[in-house]
Image (tube, rainbow, N blue to C red; front, side, top):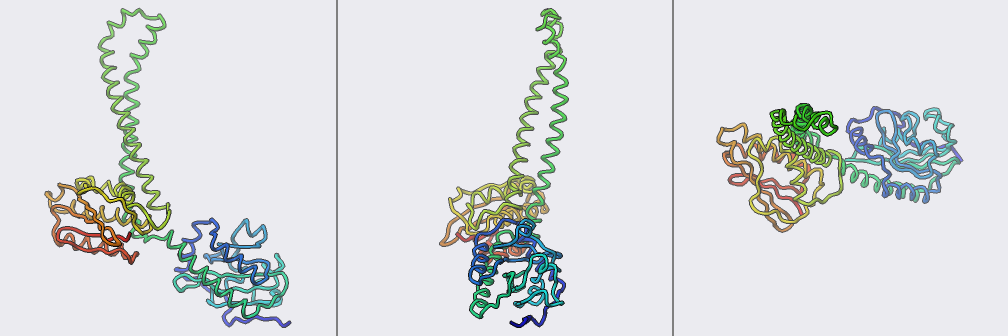
Length: 406
């Protein structure tokens, strides 16, 4: 059997920044994906190779997104220096690579073959948005020559892996400008609430200190060290302590309210930034979370009111994306109102909701905003909504409408 290296561009290269961004998104979630695991298991069983894996290239390493038959050491680490891999050549050229008798070729790295006794390698590209981001590969300790049927099958499995990687990235991807614009007011609100908690705690400490004298007096009377008649001489102190107790009760209520609002805000931020549960979400839930995120701005503009009840309906969009888009819409409308004439700052934002065939329509309105204001709002919201083709953004006579798929 002759040695075979059929790859005209087997060389390392600088990695496309877009490839790095895509793969960092995917590596953020290290959990093994069931579908990708099925793909590598099929690659291993249908080729007869001992190891199969899907590797994604990062700046200096390859990350094993899925694997089957991997040695324990590599399975624990899930990464390998990029320069030590054969997959780097698949990524660099965007074409498949077959190597037999791996140690016989000086142009390929030796460390992987030597350490794990690898004799045969076959890898095919996996892609995102037409860019090669990694490889589906199989490795074996003895030389194996794949027939054309097996090679075609690996191409099919790599195509399936590419589709699944795109799905996984869509689940975690959200426009960075949208995310920043949507959550900026939320962090301002959290800062305000934390300052309120700090101030409330300081006031609480002062109030507790002010009632300590009467508590000490009562303790001495209870222990017999002071006569009860002495309490009459201390009535002014007692009256002051009762007043301080009332203040203390109010301070505790304010602290509890601030703590509750901080908890709600952190929960909304988690859903906007981290949490991703699927491609459907209740409209009422999305609006509740987006109102929390935008509250710092909307309260200053008069708050948010609903014209009529919200329908019980699920929207067919990524939950994280919808929450951020609605928060951005509320914040920008409120900011526009606050920058306008003084009279435009009164009245608050108004929302109404209606159902259409295959969609739910959210209509935003705000007294005092003119056609130029709504044109600017329409332009901004349309830009951020463009990540989802199924969302329609339309101007109406005195407001803005979002058509959301159901």
